Image 1 (spheres, rainbow, N blue to C red):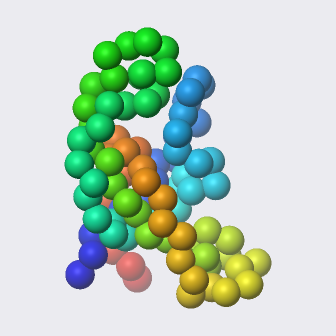
Image 2 (image 1 turned 90 degrees about the vertical axis):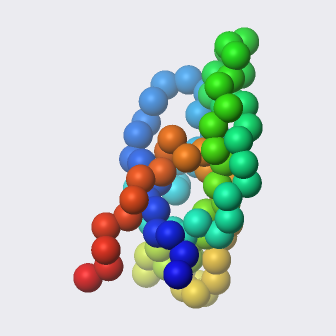
Image 3 (image 1 turned 90 degrees about the horizontal axis):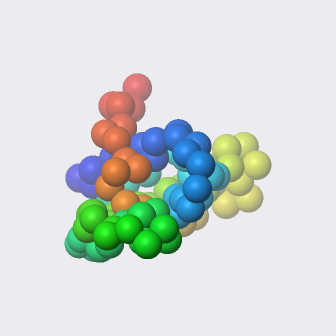
Length: 91
């Protein structure tokens, strides 16, 4: 069973690589891609500490709710682990 995660609903200032429309949404880790330099730091000439990058799969119904034309279609996004938290158990 895939690990369910929620994208943190943060809105920090500056260079952010996590799409706003995915913040607060729940998906499943499709795969772990490994550690990469954090672009949120690299954009400002800092060292860009290496952080784990994950490919997370979301359903269209999770992202767009009732407005989803094809609710079961999916979207994969690559999101750094510091943006993810464990998702609560489904009801």
